[in-house]
Image 1 (cartoon, rainbow, N blue to C red):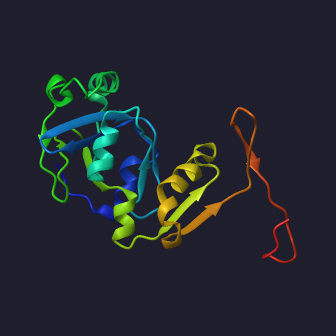
Image 2 (image 1 turned 60 degrees about the horizontal axis):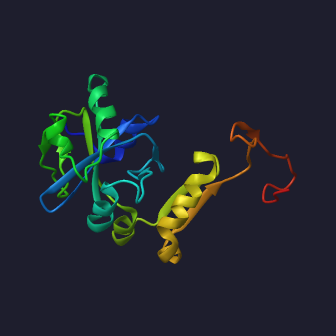
Length: 191
């Protein structure tokens, strides 16, 4: 595995491949397949969607650490298999012949067979470390990104500078139709 500067981590997951996310609580490790990832901005702020429907979610809430691992194309059978079984009753690393490797900054394992691994801490920890600028837009996930960011920061909203873009128009099915804008004489006027 090759070292890669964290400030370039966003380049590994743009435009959003299917990835693995690993979690661990104590000696119990898990891996899941995630198909919705997003670069939050050009610093190492990344997002993915999960929730209580995933076994890994409780571990992520408890430890606030995970690894986003980027599998190669020849790992497609493992990607599908991992995404269709639960870590509640399956050791997915063993079942799919993957090797957990020691991470440098967190206790969650890397996936040795993947082409890249990004060690992550959840946003609350990032806020604790002084990260306070989040960028979002109504165009990301048809508005879902803004809802998710809002949920993530709701208890600490006063600590965050939240930037957004707006004016994206979609039809009822969520298809992008364009951007609304009007030329005005005063740039500070929105109408």
